[in-house]
Image 1 (cartoon, rainbow, N blue to C red):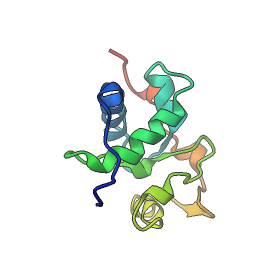
Image 2 (cartoon, helix red, strand yellow):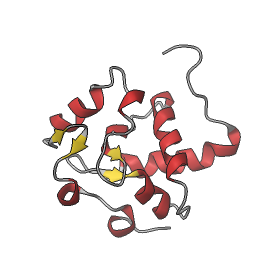
Image 3 (cartoon, rainbow, N blue to C red):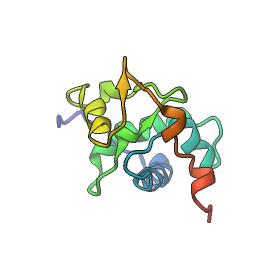
Image 4 (cartoon, rainbow, N blue to C red):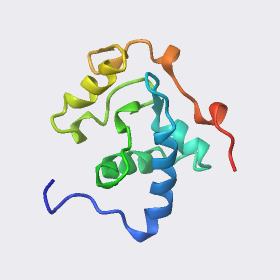
Length: 121
């Protein structure tokens, strides 16, 4: 990783930590969207911030399965933040998630909604 990697600002640190906690709870073989995580955390229009958190997830000591977070249509919009970009699809396929043309084929079937799956404390 280069020295110009993304740093988590103190302003966003708590929110990013909350995002990382939710993403770590996504079961293997399932995927969710940036907006679903944002909605669960009470920031309905914060999908972009979840994306920024996923972009910064490689800085975490504890693994964050960022490959399981895609856009609301199941598109691998964050793949360019993986090295190489094909790594996101490869990680999903290791979990038996089918990807075609940068989109999860059965996204509705494997979709994981934290608002339904998790209790909010």
